[in-house]
Image (cartoon, rainbow, N blue to C red; front, top):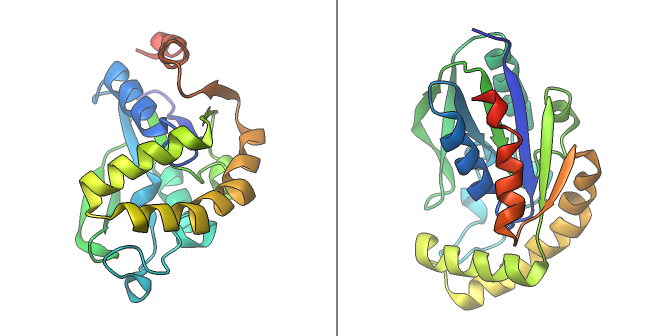
Length: 202
């Protein structure tokens, strides 16, 4: 197998980074690529959570086990298989089951804070920051959390403006400086142009 290349895709919550990551994975194919989601590396926060958010802060770097994520990236670069934790957003604990990830030519690392970690950045070959206006990110998050996570509009609004926005301003937005490429996340042509530049990897 060729040397493993690590591509990090970051951006604020609701920016479109997950969509871009999945489209890139689809373009490259599962024989050649895999995705590691930052969300799988959350630490246990069950003692802080209630049904509508509680005091859980998912947007602070300390909520992520970056040591384990960096370890897994390093192992994959050495052509070793890793067992990825699964985070349960209902209980806010890691599930007992893990997901096996075999080494691939290209590993996509996706998450709001992946470029805020110096340990992760040191292992990344290329990085993209998806830059999307706050109002659009909020509406996307509101729609997702109500539909997929059983949240209320009031709870999502409170969490966004008490935690998500402050953490975005403090940690996510500053990490944009480390990206090799910054794209605007509301224009499909920008996403398509980004995908086109990776066609040579296919």
